[in-house]
Length: 486
Image 1 (cartoon, helix red, strand yellow):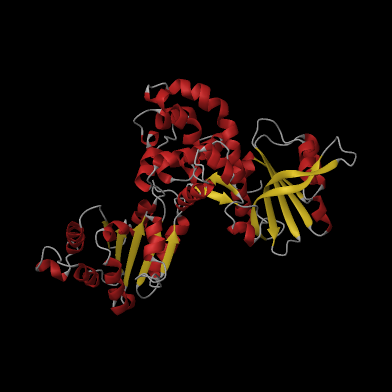
Image 2 (image 1 turned 135 degrees about the horizontal axis):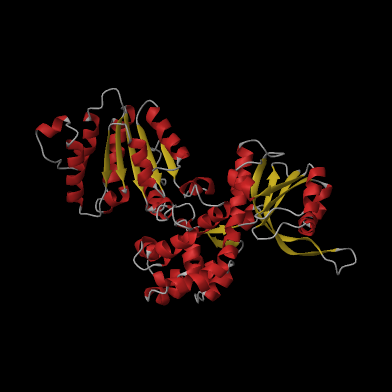
């Protein structure tokens, strides 16, 4: 069953329904669901779907020729294969799709170019000469993101400016991901997303009829299952020096978020080299550098500032619970690793992901116009601000802290402050006072709203306060999973 990807399908359909030639580039990291999305898009439409292989150029041309010739184009009566790429691409115009676009999808296009770098130039010449004015749609798809961005679409490259549509696919958001587990409890949906993230290939490995515990044991920790070796496979496919990358990713997964901390923990002495490794992982969509939501441009371009974090939830889980216990798992101690390593820490592990889920929830409310104002920026805030301090005569002090969610209106005159608690006890009124104290100096010039998110509800005093204060909203787990305020 195909789940999600409505935005991607809508984009592709809009290109297909538009008049004139369409050259679309769809790309993204491996496993993100590009192929499944393209097959769903092609369903019910006459089309040619060609998946490139890592093969010599002549064999690639032969295989592509056979795909075209099977469509009973005019040339199929005279030849068994094309002898050059220009003729093969020209034959797209002969596809017998009466009154419908001639749709051709070339999956893993970088493989086609690897042994023949001239292919983009050939395609560019044909596009400029005839294809752009014809009723054709060519979709070029690829997982090699650096090739797509630097060697295909960048300025001075043959296809620069020719694409009528460029779409970078990322992993699914929370609300699509949990559709894979409709019968899980609300808590288990958060836990499952914190483990697998939004990569469809990972989500499909779990059996929604099994408990979360059984799925973790059978589909991650058990030697031989798909996800057991997934991280190692992907890194070897995409990167060299996998040992160094392993140490860097592990350092980030274990909570080392600043460049110098990551460099020290991973034993890469030169922070400049560490920065290069991190940059490569950012390109793969495994790590990102997070800057405080109110940071200026100078701070954003300074790679020594900001915090690095794993954006891929499964990588984070794997390095937190599997990487250092690989030898035990190789010996088959699945139950021991789960009971003594995973289970005691899983809930705390998921609290990090819960904050991101809450941010997605806030974005969803904004799209549905259900917030008190429209924000132009939203994310995590870090810095020095007022903090409640009972030992201080004033009751406050200035200290380093963070705000889970800070949303700012365009003129910064309205702010939404959010705090997220993923724990088995209710959100207490005293904890709300801690949130209320933050950014106190700004209250003279800005209007503040507060959104509190809790797995286990709110104490009576806090609920009473929310009934009196229209600037305070409380969201429990059911509200968040539903995606709306009940």
